[in-house]
Image (tube, rainbow, N blue to C red; front, top):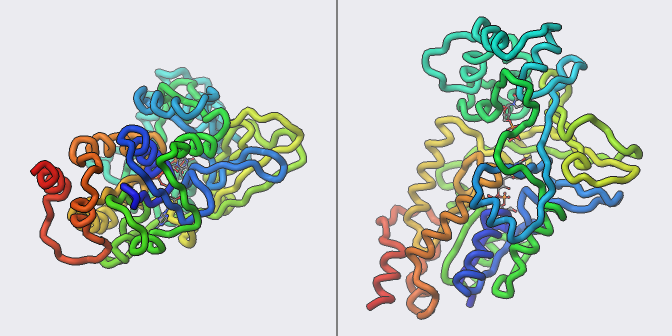
Length: 401
Ligand code: FAD
Ligand code: UDP
């Protein structure tokens, strides 16, 4: 009998496993249908001995000291500030668009103030900024939007920016200074020995058992557990009963080259050419030295693993229907990018997992009387019109009496 079953060994599942095992001294079975831990942040040494990210470049950045300090218990860090260039007709310029981007592309010598006025002159007034097109054209005008955003977004999402929520392209700022960092967060580091080592340390507690190549359906009826944390797709948990939530996927082409370096920075974006969106070179991120280098091309597609929830109002509405069912699942928590259908970064998922753990500490009695708890757990997964339960509060109350 495990106190907890956790589905998914990415950041959401692994952080919660660690907290529950170490702070509550309860037992955890954590499963993943893949053959490795780490979820989409997983990395590995390839045949050339280069540390690569299996699912594309993962750069850790956060403004939260709490999240950074928490993860520092499980890894040392390597300072790294990610830089990205956009290839515009063969000329590679900084993205986010900054002073150097504009001066290089247009052969100008503007200063920051002049650039601000230059952007204002080109910006198109948009009364109600709603879409990923609005957010860019209202800031820098249509020409730069076409060069940097429209093609990239259409490739990445299979949708025009006008069909996507503003939050997507709003992830990338526009600058009038010369700052060429992709992120400006207070903490920007890579795990010194890689993400997989970080996950091994998170999951190393003796109360945690890791089972790979195991899907939720393989254990949901057979295994004995009291509480469930689910970090997979929320629509899959409910057998897609309201229909599928759309996700965008990627095909990764990993290539190793017999040369020390391939490109000037960690990532080069190709907004106007090729079928891939970007090429990333890991040695920039990891600081590894050696005669060979490994790069990854990302080709967006609708087939394959669900990497990106697609932020559009109708998808959000569908998610809310699943979320309403999820709220009625007794003794079950839905956490992470897939379970919440949110375009979260790694630090946001860690933050959410830590917040969920605080809620658990507040509302779930430490496992003492296992029979009561086992009786109370409802096996979930069906689109039944159940009355909302009082969930954990009921368990707490009954245990007290
Ligand atoms: P996941 O990492 O997806 O983990 C969920 C796990 O659950 C998976 O391993 C899956 O196999 C397993 N699972 C699902 N369903 C089941 C089931 N039914 N049974 C068993 N197992 C199941 N974030 C950043 O902060 N910086 C970046 O630079 C960055 N780059 C990214 C690049 C790409 C290409 C992608 C796709 C994402 C990137 N992210 C980045 C986001 C980051 O990957 C996520 O925020 C984070 O990994 C989400 O963690 P998670 O635990 O919620 O989900
Ligand atoms: N984007 C773009 N051109 C770029 C970089 C980003 O159009 O050169 C848009 C695109 O829609 C992308 C979004 O901004 O999906 C967010 O970019 P980010 O680099 O944050 O994407 P992620 O790393 O999450 O794939």
